Length: 511
Image 1 (cartoon, one colour):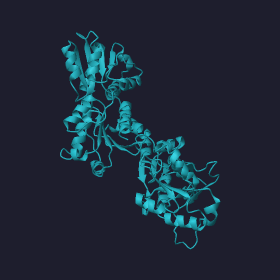
Image 2 (tube, rainbow, N blue to C red; image 1 turned 135 degrees about the horizontal axis):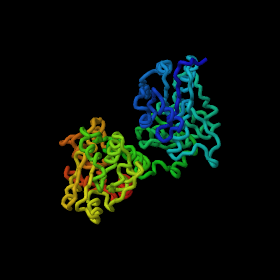
Image 3 (tube, rainbow, N blue to C red; image 1 turned 90 degrees about the vertical axis):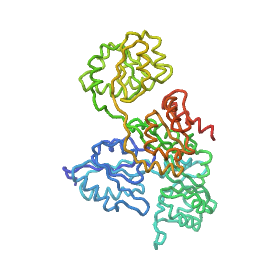
Image 4 (cartoon, rainbow, N blue to C red; image 1 turned 45 degrees about the vertical axis):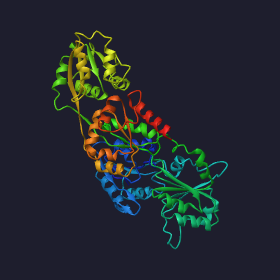
């Protein structure tokens, strides 16, 4: 009997690692939850979708290291629900497949707490798929079984019927079996499975740091030891493993496994990171810049009060557009206030940002930088006209200075400020020291300045040894070179999509 004053619990399968594999319903539950209780195997990128005011509780279990025992996790879920809260219990894979979701659901029933189970994409199927291994195949097998590999080999009686599964099932998928690999192999062979049977171990499956070791039941244990493979891992046994060489689609992505540092501001990094992930890279978000409202709105407010006097407004970034229109709206104004203005933007991405406010740019230069803006405006009758340039507090003076030289009247209004954010510098420095970073990306001169300051003026050159440097355009590249770094990658078009493709081409040529 459920009590009416209770909250509600959603037992959600988060999928096996790739954040894109969570279900639509699962993500909706995360978004509306008051409390998110999440596991070690639930990708933390999913937590970005939660409400800013929601409570976040980590209860991960890693090998023998448990943040909380299962009984205490059960009690925690019950306690939060009895406080009247909506609880999202985010579990790796599927809650009802070796996820102990059944135990948690029983606890909720026993305490009269309403709940729903949101199935997830189980690691049993997704992880082999990302390793290029179909679990069933008409020419190899018509049966598959999921088995725990976590049993204590010293138990007097096993719950796994080795005599039946060793030869009675075509494909076997073992969960949590890394520590018991030798025991699994021995049991399969001793109960009749051929020692030449193919086997694969897949660590961190579906993630961009996925690692796979293949072999046979005879040689897999030393191979895994040599590869220093560890948990979490899925074990696949069967002839279907031989298809991996032909069907290995995921690890064939052009940037697979490369750790690439993204120094963009956190609110802008996600699109860049997603594009890198789509090509197999592992983005390491290390924002060296943060975008905040200006200390004073005085300059922009004065400009907004006189919008009708400007013939042109020039936007040199999407941030300028965002803050400009947020301030416009906060002052009770809307896009009708811009009826007398022509608008110039620095490039297509800035034009897209403008279109979000139902406005089209009147002028987009062929070259996406300040020089391109000036070249495009060169065909206009600039002399005597008034220009408004909403921008960052600190920025290049090229556009205002040149327009003034051409006889224009220019108002520069601070719409936002770039500041250096707090960051986990020690974590990033450790990755550099361990030679785990393939490339660093810079999307503005400010990101380069702050990156150097954050890593340390005396350390950054040494840390950047053998690390590729990617810059969005020549202005940023010039700043990077002034710091003594060699620019390896720069796109022809100064946009994020073009930068990603330039990185793909760079590594294609290297291989």
